[in-house]
Picture (tube, rainbow, N blue to C red):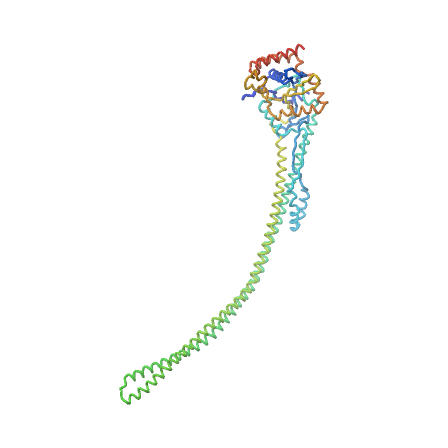
Length: 543
């Protein structure tokens, strides 16, 4: 028991609700409780009391403060509280990892594996954890805040009721074990998901690298084929070009020869025409210079006929030249057509030779595109699956963080402490022996907003305001429900309460009596209510 006392952390029951919060001394807090107990007795319509106070006892609700990473988690030895956690239930991740490794040497198998597991990680199933006795974060935070606000006091109130009635540290260690077990399971789940992501990334990188290598191989293979084919094609094209040039020379030479022949004929005709023109000019001059004698007239007629004949022959020569020129023009047209025909024929031959190179380039591009599309499809499937795994990992991490965030209050040293939360337990009994329990958890004592009016008897703000709804729930909900649900426990509490009843102690009654005057002086309660309290206390003492 002495070892337990050394480990106790005791927090004060009540504190003022002013800005400078201070714990209330024991005399005042007992007087407050007595005031509240009397005020909350059940009464009839004519204000007649229907209950008596069976006992008032100062009690402590003990919880373990267990050290974790220089902070505490809080454990409820009575198991009125529990820590619940919903986490994701993993699919068979180990099987998935093994299948990934088995598909290392087969991209088709790897691809079919991705298709088969398309929904494996997207449909979350839930699993629930419940650690009985472990106090959840909201209540732990409320307790921590109370400790930080008001600190701890040095000693327990004498003759107080300590809960649990039977303390067993092994139960605390069982709670710690269960919590660590849940934590390990979540850590294992996270590790499995991280391993799955790692293996998926490694296998994806391997298969992507294979596709890249295949693309490089395709490019190299086709480059070699294209280079070899290009050498043959280029040689054939050069031969065709040489053949074309030779054929063109022959055609042009043939046409040039014929054209040259016709041009030489035109030259001869032009010479003849020039001579005829000279003769024509000479005769014409002779005619113009002749005398009009009978003899000359005969020559003039002859010369005129000769001129006419020369003129006719010159016209004939011009016609011959025109005909020859038209033949030359026809030859030029024919030559152009034949040259164009040769150009087209050789162009088609060259294009047919080059087509094999173009076809090989198109075939290479198709093969490369096929690999790239395969890589893109593979990447999309992997990214979808990876996002699903990471989403599941995120949920598992959030669940683990809920456990990691449980330790709150910082402390010095690494010892387990027993945190004592004070409260007052009151038992009312009616004339039929029916019992009603009432608790007063750690609260802030506040001044009334105004004195109660005579025509509004009893209507005023409550004197005690619970510090925290979470802490209040321990006593006014869970503890009272536990008393109702467990008759054996209720019997033990009733027996201990009667034994430790504050109202059976003369010293306690005297403390209350004196404290009532302090309540009046400090303005907590009006004189009329103080007089009623003293009267009921005297009546209890005389009885």
